[in-house]
Amino acid sequence: DAKTTQPPSMDCAEGRAANLPCNHSTISGNEYVYWYRQIHSQGPQYIIHGLKNNETNEMASLIITEDRKSSTLILPHATLRDTAVYYCIVRVIGSGTNAGKSTFGDGTTLTVKP
Amino acid sequence: GAGVSQSPSNKVTEKGKDVELRCDPISGHTALYWYRQSLGQGLEFLIYFQGNSAPDKSGLPSDRFSAERTGGSVSTLTIQRTQQEDSAVYLCASSEMVNTEAFFGQGTRLTVV
Image 1 (cartoon, one colour):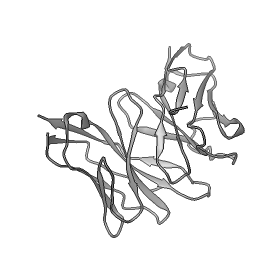
Image 2 (cartoon, chains in turn brown, blue):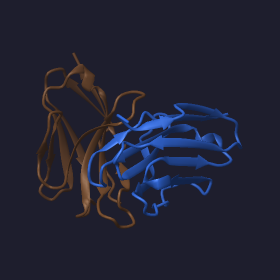
Image 3 (cartoon, rainbow over the protein chains, first blue to last red):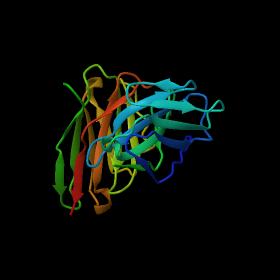
């Protein structure tokens, strides 16, 4: 399984863009990159995912490098409620033995400050 | 249901007892995942089910752990002869297919005393 590495913590000023990096240098061709976040004592919440193209939804944007070895989650206008642990996940797709298996990074604790 | 439902939400058990954790996925979701999260730690993948296919059990931490999914819907995670190191939050998630977003339940907090 491809492993992911993330910085343990980051700060961001309220209203500014938060850019959270993730390294997945051993990612294979059949693995998607997913981002989730977890607010204290709650179950993880899906944010966004992608294979090789940049993606955007109402919550965030995902930028994946051309070689797919790293990605960046962008929260365009961070609010205090975005304070959470953000996980970068690589998930195998398909129906093989490892299908659905997720390798989690250690997560980045994002603190949005007023 | 509206979301992934897990029961019980909290479980305190004595060391050596067996426990069974239940997960009701979102209706129609074919993929179901179990994770474990120890205090202050990230999520550890345990097992994954796709429909009625046999799961990949390689992520289960020991042979005291087992999981099944009946009829491609409800899943149970069973821990036999619980140990204190089994104390954690056990999270279940489901997704419509394997490469779509997964929705998590609120977890079962297991405490082994």
